Image 1 (cartoon, rainbow, N blue to C red):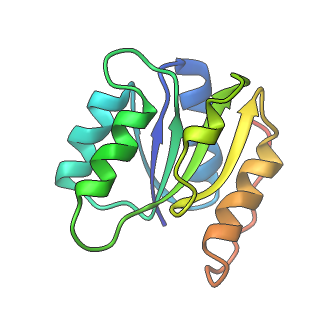
Image 2: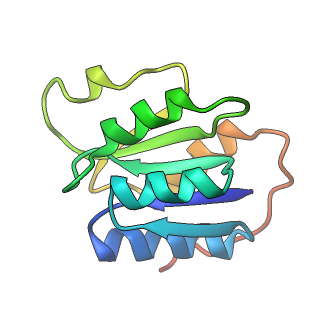
Length: 128
């Protein structure tokens, strides 16, 4: 699976990248929504793990950009701090799940597996 991890917090971005890399996925990361959009312009992804609150272009900007793409669009896992009402603004048609920060790594993997149930599971250690 080809995964794009988008978060302005370097620790979270690194941790999530490691989790998917250890699963055997091809992973790319972006520091914010603007960098994510640049990645999405040149490469296709199966899954985007997306923070909503970021500088420059936020996660909603990335979601809006995804709506402009022709063809296959990636599935989305949203990661966000608990901000009342914010999650309600996330379009649910492409989003497989929303994780509040701090989040459980096992839940992150479970959402990825829910998004791609026919994918052959590879064993992965959940320690960072």
